[in-house]
Image 1 (cartoon, rainbow, N blue to C red):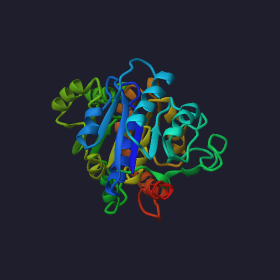
Image 2: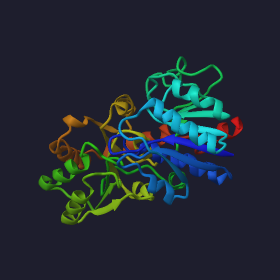
Image 3: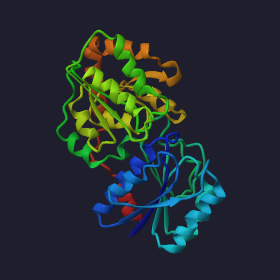
Image 4: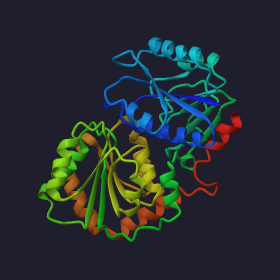
Length: 346
């Protein structure tokens, strides 16, 4: 079957939507299906990353902020040129109205969401996040026939994570190896704040990995800091799971990567860098799987310096975080059970 994925990335939007859609595309390709991405030509759009992984990208050419009419018209034109069986939508600006106008052109619609703040006209809705009442929060936002795939059982996991999970054991709590990754675009400059925290930090770690995305506007400054401190610098990588596996603690942001850290038993901090991360990060902290540092504007370099000392001293707490993260994401049905309902729908 032919699948069209409508998603976007930019320095403002971030890279998370595109990266999790790439996981969907890879899973579908393993089963013999063809996937095309439809993305807007925004600064930091990641089209080259998608194409490098072997997927065709249709670039939507209108510029500026999301414009409903232009977006629908351009996507409808794609359907007129090529038959698609399924449309997968991972986009905060798309809702029921957009989907209703696309439905006549496609057999099935799948929505990936984590906000539960708007109605959808879809056949499957996928939201792997853990928040209050996550089992029922979409009940009034989707049609009755929609199959809802909700909660950590349905994490969208790249193969690199599922393979490593099989070998993972809970961390011992001693932090020797540190991983720093604040998201692909890091629009709030958290990585730089952490780098500046090391200027006055008088402790040490055996090894520090710093990861940035291609869309990070500070990536060259971060590289300079890494050279200064002797840290390993990584840009736009496809081996994040391997770095997580060898790390004892990670300084990170909220979002889907927070649950990936839990999946491989990696204790971590989470800084909230977007509104959609507030509820999930608070819930993760309540469950004891992350340290919630709070809203990014209130998290200073001094706060990160304090965290560095904290993780050295809190061996028992870090060990418990690792165990709880593995337990929360344990799935007796195996990794990526969302694939089966998608294929059954077809």
